[in-house]
Amino acid sequence: MSVLIVGGAGYIGSQTAKRAAEAGLEPVVLDNLVYGHRWAVKWGPLIEGDLADGALIDRVIKQHRVTAVIHFAAYAYVGESVTNPRKYFRNNVVNTLNLLDAMVDGGVRDIVFSSTCAVYGEPVQVPIAEDHPRDPVSPYGESKLAVEKVLHWYQRAYGLRFAALRYFNAAGADPGGEIGEDHDPEAHLIPLTIAAALGERVLEIYGTDYPTPDGTAIRDYIHVADLADAHLAALDRLGAGAPSLTLNLGTGRGHSVREVIAAVEKVSGRKVAVRETARRQGDPPALVADARQAAAVLGWKPRYPDLDTIVEHAFRWREKKPVPG
Image (cartoon, rainbow, N blue to C red):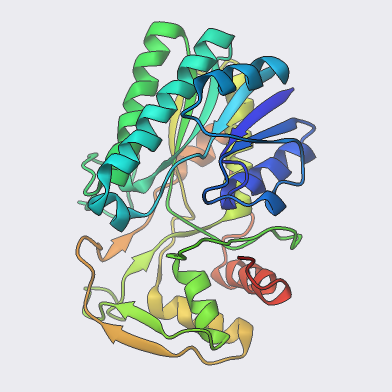
């Protein structure tokens, strides 16, 4: 079985390609390498190209006899999406339409879509379940929600089957140490905190007056390997003829910024230099998943829910192999 992984040279996509190969599938990676890395594609062919090229997608589906798709190819910087929304809607929505059209025309019916908790916007209740109101506060979140709606209508009209996986804060690195996180610019807390522990920067804490136990914002950190497992489980579920799915992925447990700093200091044995500053606009006090549906429907449970383990894998990757440029 050949599965097309678009955005498969990126952080989560490459980990999913590894898991797909371990599961006996043939991962075929299509990536424009804007944010992905050639060195991260180790488990199948890499086709360098863009989802704006519908003819290319058609050729890849035919040549590799693709039977299913996992879609990671999105821009994901929330702040940039606010200042440059057309970039996000063009890539995340318009280009996804090219992919879906190629699937329909090529007879490919199953897709696992990388969605996000950003579709919920400001939480009205925590933990956040799948029936929480969807009210994005950024073009990034709006673009992901738009694709979820498109998937619904493509299902009704063309028989497409989908799993939209709304995950929270991806973190950690490959437990085997082969691949890890390398964003430019880096916006995720754990790698930024590790960089501060290594003396490369000062970590900024945005807000210390939140209504949380230590005053800093709380997030649900989910290991990248667990996310990969969930994508494969969702693909198996669709392949078995199950109806389309929309599920949260998280641990159900939140950790504050200060708890992340403490975990990095514990794992690294080094002090993290910090600078306290004002809250960022739009940052809620807490984002934590209610992921019980994923457990019930997919039989999925995080293998690495512990924050220290997540940080240890991330630090081991970063220390062993300084982030490539």
